[in-house]
Image 1 (cartoon, rainbow, N blue to C red):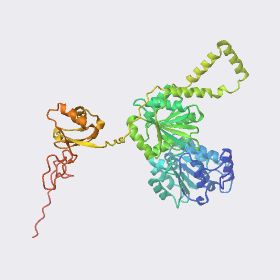
Image 2: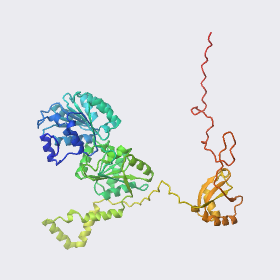
Image 3: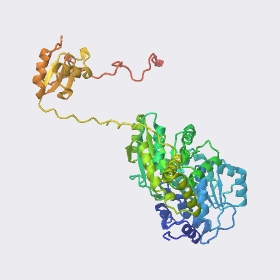
Image 4: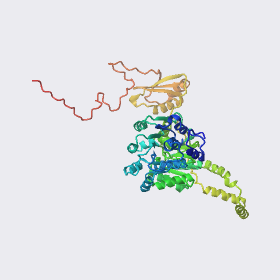
Amino acid sequence: MLFPRLNAALERALEARGYAEPTEVQAAVLATEADGRDLLVSARTGSGKTVAYGLAFAPDLLGAAERMPRAAAPLALVIAPTRELAMQVQGELEWLYAQAGAQVVSCVGGMDARREARLLAAGCHIVVGTPGRLKDHIQRSQLDLSSLRVAVLDEADEMLDLGFREDLGFILEAAPAEKRTLLFSATIAREIAALARQYQRNALRIDTVDKSRPHEDIEYRAIRAGQGEEFGALVNVLRAADSRALVFCATRDGVRALHQRLSNHGFAAVALSGELSQAERTSALAALRDGRASVCVATDVAARGLDLPELDLVVHFDLPNGPEALLHRSGRTGRAGRKGVCALIVLPRARRRAEQLLMAAKVVARWMPPPDAAAIRAADQARLAGDPALTEPASPEEAAQVATLLAAHGAEAAALALLRLHRARQPAPAEISTPPEPESRSPTPRQALGPTQWFQLNIGRHKNADPKWLLPLLCRLGGVSRKDIGAIRIFERDTRFELVAGAVDGFLASVAVAEMEDMRITPTTPDRPAFAPPGRPEPADAPRRFKPHGMKPYAKPYAKPGAKRARRPVRAAAG
């Protein structure tokens, strides 16, 4: 084992789980300088934070012993923002401390509070819970923190975002002042630093997040979906991946509607949102973990702390509200060394917002159209050819049934039936259009015209001159194309434009025979009339100065229309 200075019971538990070496955050909390100190830790999702603080507080609970003392008042408290994360933490600590004989109890909203009270009264070593339920047990004198040696705040930034600061303060103040406080967060924002200053003593700060680098195990893709085709784009993204996926929506109503549509389309889908009971949410996660479901549609309640093994795809059906939400949602994949894909479904109207979101999160996404139906069918065929069912040896019973089928229908009919059954198990891909590439926002640089000649047209702003109609007019009258005309400068009484030298002779010949009524075009120079010095009138053809529409020249900036002026108080004359 490469884990430093571990308790023997925990070392055996890690070996049984296949842990060969610590992650970066686990090695940091086990370093000598972290011994016995409060810790302020920032680490990416999926970096092994739960095991990290489980190992960090082992000396406080076990000391040199391999077995926990008799269960009484809890020795360690872990506070998590959501029910799912709290129950996941309970499961992790149970296997980590199983050989040490630790009793781990969870206290979360949505579960039977009376059962939790009975378990607390029977004695335990570690309590894991959500802030509201923990506070309720403390107020009812069902949770005794007098023997607490260590408190852990997991996903502290999320707890502050959810408005649990007051509850956290109540819980921490109910615990002994000499306890260790371990604060774990994805980021150390100003609010987190203030919380650490208030409730920690001489904390060691550990930062394992390189903010200059995005998550290297996640590939980001921005899927350009046509207007009204976002559901079809999602269907094809899920079908092309052919793996377990987590799809995020912005609202509970959105989760409900999208879950229904995916189920109707043939996907084995489950839903996860705050309106569901705890039993329903636990059942949904269990179905996704054991493979009974392939797609989970969720709100941001699933964006924090959940560990979903073999989750290879995260889809943002609704764009997240900010870069932190994007990173936390995406962090459900690419965990513990596995590679993952994060896809954003982007409609044309949301292109700019998606670009700003990715830039703020410092991630680079590959822009691409949704997979088309033909490509998905080709991938299905390749997957069928490599299906283990075709290569595994047949049992005697299966061999007899195969012989019967071949004798009755022939090899071609049997293969066709296999193909149809394989397709029937898969939702049909959507037939969608390929959205065009958006035009670049940066203008294409104009090619140099070379030698040019300037001309003057006796139409200016006084006759509403505008390049939108002047340019086509000049092309028609002079028999030239748009690329032959360069700059156009509009003044009060005339307009001056630039013409490439090679087109001048043909332009003059065409203008000479054209019917132009009162219009006159003559060679000139590009010079613009200068502004007159202060106090002198400007020439009639001087360019118009900018003046906001409707602004009065000497209007008081803060005066309300119709407001009366306050009268100064009259001071009495001294007697």
